[in-house]
Amino acid sequence: MARLDGGRREEGRFAGAVLAAGIRVSALLMAAGLLLRAWRPQPWPQGVPHWGAILRSAAGGHGEALALLGIAVLIATPYVRVATLCAAFARGRQWRLLAVSAAVLGLLLAGLLSVQSS
Amino acid sequence: MAETILRTAGLLAAGAASGLVGALLGLGGGIFLIPALVLGFGVPMHSAVAAGLVAVIATSSAGGAQNAEHGVANVRLGMVLEVATVLGALGGGFLAQRLAADWLGLFFAAVLLAVSVTLCMRRRVREAHEYHGSGGLLDGRYHDPASGREVVYSVRRLPVALATSLAAGFVSALLGLGGGILKVPGLHLFCGVPMKAATATSNLMIGVTAAASATIYLAVGAVPGALAATVCLGVLAGSRAGVRLSRRLSERLVARLFAVVTLTISLFMFRRFLHGSP
Image 1 (spheres, chains in turn blue, green):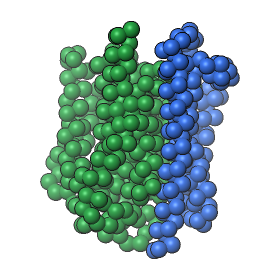
Image 2 (tube, one colour):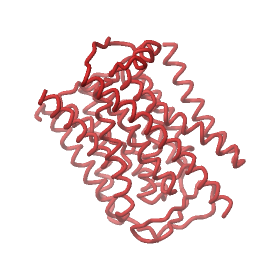
Image 3 (cartoon, rainbow over the protein chains, first blue to last red):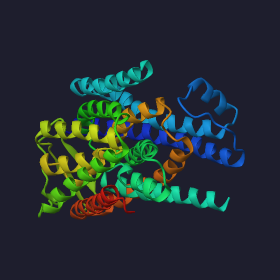
């Protein structure tokens, strides 16, 4: 039981650290984007986003692009959390939980691929 | 200019309030945010749903960071149930683009009413010391500051939890919610999970559910960037406060708050969407 508890604590710590890092980065990008947007408003095209253009615009200090980038980081955070837990389960030799978390990650990635192809 | 500042402050406050209540009750926040955006700020339903999904991820991540570290969120149970939830969310996400906004709102109100009635009909809520573990793979253990006790519990009826999570994922994608309105009562009423652990585990899971759906909205350019970012900054602050508050409240109070809040919102949304009154 003690070993199991130790494993649970470690898994919780990993998950917590990934989530905390994700929200810090995304909050920083969103706050910077909103401030730049208010200070120096620039036109922004509507419709389907092209991520190459968004990254270039964000690097050039475009507020809307930075805000969108922050949202993208926030959306990616749970994906990274699941991937991190896969690693934690593998490290703790929790094979059944590793299979389950790998299935979740697989489903998420399948969803991503289907969005890209449609 | 003054109007823009007021609107921004209002969106931040709405985000903070929904983050606080969402993290406290494991609901994600979309359940409160979408009505606020539609009714209070005149945001179209589909944009509000997209912003709500992103806000759910913010609530989940901010709350989950603390709850996972303290062990209140059952990381293992959450991961098992996420398989069913993500399947439901992916199906609902594709269907959402083909449904009319009015029907989304009506469905939203009906789901809330069903959940609140179920919780209101329940007379007795178990307190922290009444739970026991059995040494299973999905058992949970955490310290409850409100009762000053170590809470150990076992998860019962896993198939019911999986079915509830599948439905929750579907509802989440359709309505921009985290699906916690189904998962929390499902885990607590049928699977023997203490209310606080149910809310914390639901809070952790809804980030994955919402991420699966939000990715679809983001890919088709349906996420309103500035609006969602403003709301999310408020949500991040509010949800951290919500988790801290949750640790100090009793099981009974969290359950009662959950029932009252969902019933109120359900009646409000029924009035708005069935009779067209604000």
